[in-house]
Image (cartoon, rainbow, N blue to C red; front, side, top):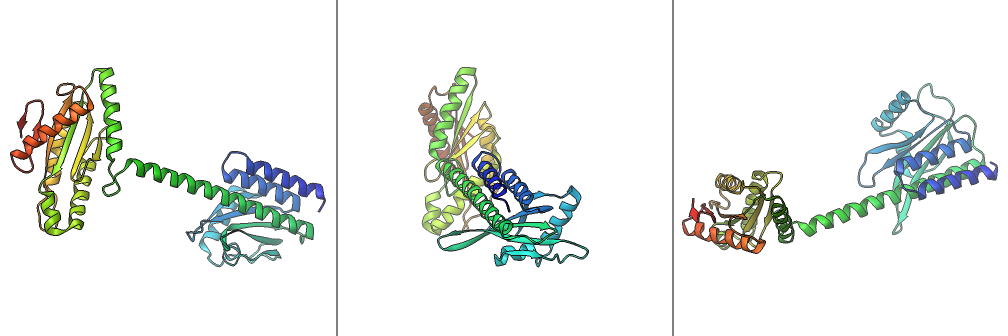
Length: 334
């Protein structure tokens, strides 16, 4: 194997793995350069998620669409296929005769793996088909290409893991972990944004505050696990009852809030009360909520004033009994 061919593969591999782009395109370029350099007629790279048994074809050269699809299907459906055995055993095979009926030529399979904390992590396999046996230079080049492909796959998966964790932390920063609704921080931000937009456009914003009736009694009588069940059930009703433009959040221990752009706050609040009233008993106790609704700009001009108006409406509603709805504007309990 001439040194300049190996250098060309290394140069191309370094370039494609260092630049932006999908790992699939990078590995396809690496595979194309490698198969050309070793004189192989075709090649594939399959990848396997360390946490899942399924393997995925992510790069191929030297196939037409039909034959590639058939080959990928054969590998996927045959647990004893040589490619899958290479991933499982992590053994290098050079110049093997094909097992498939009617197939000609030779096959070489190289596992893709990295070592982390002294543990080998199988990531996939690089396989090529060729007519003549590979010389020592070609074998070394294939081994180097497999190592580069493994590093590329590992880097892509680490980047994906970092992105997933970042997204998870971002969600957790804005979400109440028990109910899955927005938390107080997110509610405050959304309310300020909606009030600012309504102020610019001359629109309205409704704010509803919901309080679970006799929640402390449920906790005391049935335990905190039952109380958590009640919170989750009420949160589910809220999430299912609101519109796409609305925001619902957990606000305090047993209170929830709804930010509803426009004038639909009372309509949505009634829907929530009806949905909660239809819930089955939790720990033998009926679940109900009371609510207070206030509107910007009719009842208040700031976020603090609007929340205070909704809380006053809630207090009046609760004074009238469980499962009631109060409106700040009219100060009537419904």
